[in-house]
Image (cartoon, rainbow, N blue to C red):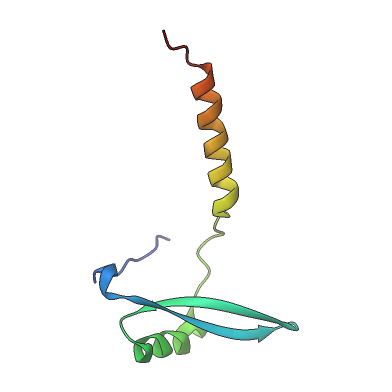
Length: 79
C-alpha cells in the first residue's frame, strides 16, 4: 500500500502533541492539523489505523548517506 497525502497545503497545518502512558512510560505523538479540534478528531480515529511498513530511523540512514558521500568525495582527485 502507498501512503496517502493530504491535498491541503502543509503550511496551513500546525503540529499538535498528544501524550499517552504505556507500559509505565510516557510517549508522545504529533498530529498535523489545521486546528486543535481537528487534531482531537484525528486522535479519535487512530484505533482504525492499519499497519503500512516500518520506517527507518532517519539518524542512522542520514549518517550512512553522509559517510558514503564523504568516502566518495575523498576518492575524487582534484587537479
